[in-house]
Length: 78
Image 1 (cartoon, one colour):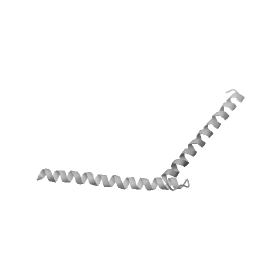
Image 2: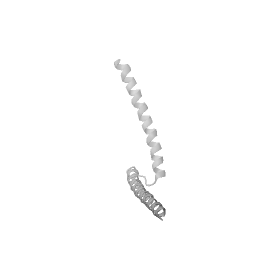
Image 3: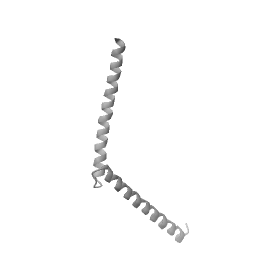
Image 4: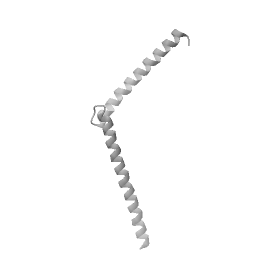
């Protein structure tokens, strides 16, 4: 009988832990949705599309900065 009680207590702890984890994940999802809404999107799929576009824009800007830096370096003999 004690073994059954111990097993039930162990399962209760595990269930309570899972409930807590679930609540935290739901809260995190809510926060993530608020963040993507700041970018004017309301679904994860649309957020992925925006992310791809932003990554491409970032890459373009990095290349532009690097080219500008290289040009300045050449002009001013760094």
